[in-house]
Image 1: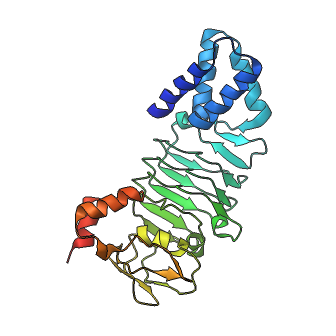
Image 2: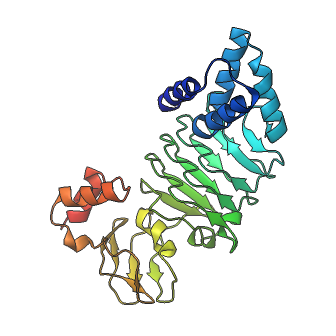
Length: 291
């Protein structure tokens, strides 16, 4: 567990009295699992064992009735199709999600400081809210083609706080163009690899695009050098989009606030970044304002 999860764990335990009945214990287990992950619940189980309370058996019963654990104590739903919680305490730096998994649950990896590389198989068609949020050392993500399907579902803030994210790999460009996300989940810019090759082609945003999805990832893809719209109102320099008019699609503004020419100082740009969950570094600022 990370420090915040451990602090929260003590708070949750303090909410329940020592003489806890079966109903309260299950509610306690649920709360710990939701806020501290499987690592938190397994930690409590060890405390119960050391204290010889017998409550460790109740934790085992709760897990057995509702979930499935793999050899590394990663938690899945009963069917094994949803990865509920990645066990941070197993210290794995590289994790290949099993092919049987079709969904990554909300906050499944949230706050994990160990994970460096994640491989998402073709079977996964859903990623939950904040699934990788705060994975401070995550550097490389391999996305399967399931996330490019029409019926794929992805939540918000999936990669928010992943400041070291360097590479995203997909088999086809369609797999990331159709990747549905919102709230600007990428914190850092990254290189995009398509079929094993760095994607550095010019991009044209067509008038018929229906939403911001098609340009969200482009903003953070540092390998793309030139971006055009049909109206010539968007341009890109050195991997950073630098010129926005108030781009509209079907009369609806996509990024009404993201108008780079409105920023006159570095502090204005950084303040915008803070408001929209963007990590705009000094180096990025110098590229925005460079003549």
